[in-house]
Length: 365
Length: 212
Image 1 (cartoon, one colour):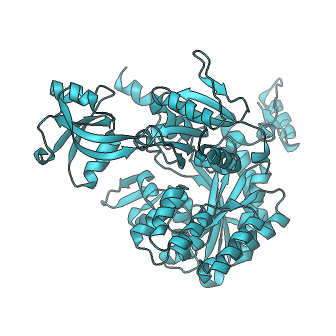
Image 2 (image 1 turned 180 degrees about the vertical axis):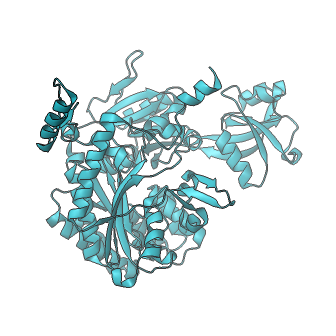
Image 3 (image 1 turned 30 degrees about the vertical axis):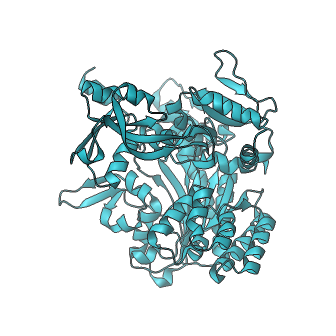
């Protein structure tokens, strides 16, 4: 095979092209979601496709660092392609917003570019659709974002389960650990490695280590969380900040149970946030037959401050291309029937086609 | 939740080869009987809790990563080489072995050159291990019969799994240093676990119980 032929046939990892009916369907879905976000008062934003790497380097975790594409511009500056819209958006908003603008609600639907291993072709992390509520703290803001995610998934009939956890809980319980131990503990909790979690906590206090291991591996409903909270409070194993966060999660779950259209939420305290910028609640949505989470989000109250504009934020992003094949009732987004107009002259055909188009039909000359 | 109330069997990938009889025996001792008929690569346990696939050992993490099988039984060496991150639910009491640096008899650890050349199947582990010790290493990837490399002069050292050391001795090689332990685990695709955690936890508890 010639080198040219080989290059033509190769598909680079971490990006995709899609065409015709598939692209039509994609745009329909995006339009539907954009319409939902707009009906909640969110405005669109577009972020640059690349930016200076050094702006983001301290905010990238190990995995993100491995997957970002970097390039050098003509001046020798190191750039990175947009691998996560939240980060690029934070910088843009940090530059554009002033205190009097807050709160600001924004949404985006755009391409992201990440390296993926050859074995990871099913991840399809090519396109993020999401929202951010900037300038609001507290339960109402967290609920707004969680419910908007639930409504987003419901709109396209994705019966996902949203696992709600907290980075703040982890931060409160890991205070006092060295940075290396804190990172190791975070990795062990995220990986639900009970032996490792217990081992890392054992060095602090054998008695509370058992409780904290159960706490961080907890998945369940509000009643079970309440039991765990009471045990933590009675025993004195948890600092005040951790107790407050558990109460916050419990309160969120109660509200969500009443307001969500179906039982889509669970508390999962092993969800502590995959990105270093999270500060409060964190969550991921899981769907049957998907190899990894389809949506994620949380609260990041200090991210915009990093870019010079202190404003609390909470948001989510949905990996839209990943879930498009799973979106039910696919006919909803298919191209409508096309009417082919044939008349004795082009002018007649054109006028007839225009009439049909005014009636909302697709007419082809 | 509808997701874990459905009576759908959990999917599990099992490795073909030397571990399989031990896995099947262990599962059976906990009341999970899986019988693979001749040349069939899929089997259900009689209680309908498991749908099991037989796959090549090194391919197992790929199947679990893609969620084709939600669970898998796999050695820590293969998991490490895959680079995938799974939930480790259980460590089995069988299949333990060592990862060792070996070379021709008489070559001790003190004879390490500054630049180590090693033939191995375990390329990621070897590189990470020596780099973490500040030792530059040239890794030559082999798919099998690694112990031939020093004999034929491909590389002075090998990194390989060592159980009894019999194969090394037969080729006039010896263990220079143990680099790590290999254990066998029940692992889960994280997304699959989150959706099925109650059924999976029940199975994990059952497997943790002492056998008959």
